[in-house]
Length: 215
Image (cartoon, rainbow, N blue to C red; front, top):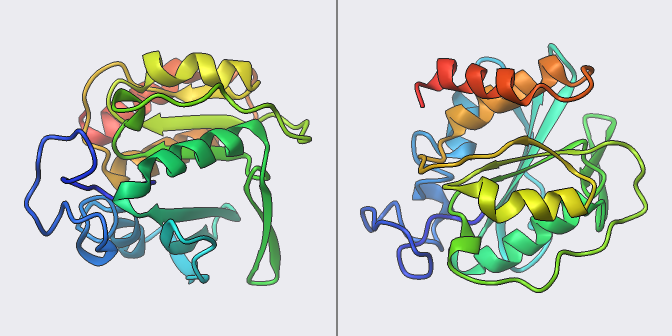
């Protein structure tokens, strides 16, 4: 996800402290109360197990959380606000199964990016601001992969791209929304509960999030 940035993103401006795309600690999407890092650190279900070094210059922080009751891991990258285009490209590559990453945490080998079972973009919908080159080609991964995009009006901008990549659209949006981490947690929890069902139950998942987070 790209940090909230008043200067480089087409968003309704937020207070300067929350909208500084170079300051993850106080950023609306990361360090603020409902930002990813802050919210999941407070969660009773998830525990912070690693804060690896930044994997690339556009990423300021990476965190890895674990839900020990279900042996699930959630890894999140905080891209600089100005790097939202790169964050979007990297998300699509991950959805395609490209750029697979392996990371070890707590003696577990985790599959990140192109190796992940579920890829998520949360934050501003950068495709409302800029155009991208054609959707990347698919990678070598053959297992099913799902994607969640918690951003304003993500469905008309991203669904066809995900379909071309062979990536299942688990949850997309059709209107404006606040991309808060509580919504991400609800979406991930619902996906974990339903991941063995075929096809993925998109409508029940959306209802679950609506119920839990009062969208």
